[in-house]
Image (cartoon, rainbow, N blue to C red; front, side, top):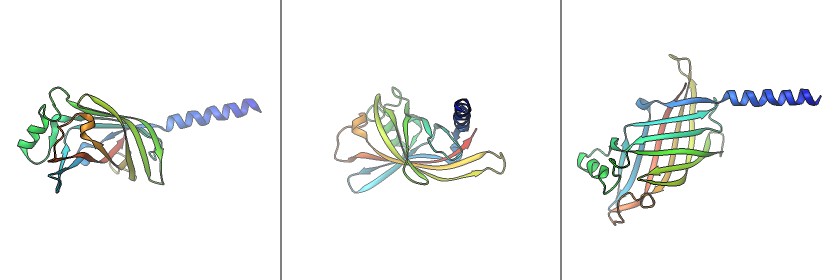
Length: 187
């Protein structure tokens, strides 16, 4: 009886491990965005056009892990002069620090379709642990590929000064709101 129980436990563990698969972001249907307060009266929004987001998750995105690589030079705030200033050593220093990365270390389910994901965010040569709120908007089978696709939204706040991005100035807020809308395809 003990051998049978042990064998069944191994089968269940194996099935759980096999249920995890790789998911990749679809750049044409995803966006890595941010907003920051300007002059304490308005919000300026921007995004990064080049990024790679990979997740390892089951078919329902429970217990997912994420790896993110964002190219700093792809920043876009709809203003070329501002974008160039943000790429400069005054802010992101894109030449010296070309990527912003995130690697998750903890996944916590908070509701039927919601979760928190915690991990290390590295930006401007500084790494800090951050927690993002997540929501699974839906999971479908793509008609063309017959593979699963998932819609996700990740949100959170980071303090730019903690990462050494920009100086302490009254014209900019310290907190940057992050909004990542993802369409991910199971590989």
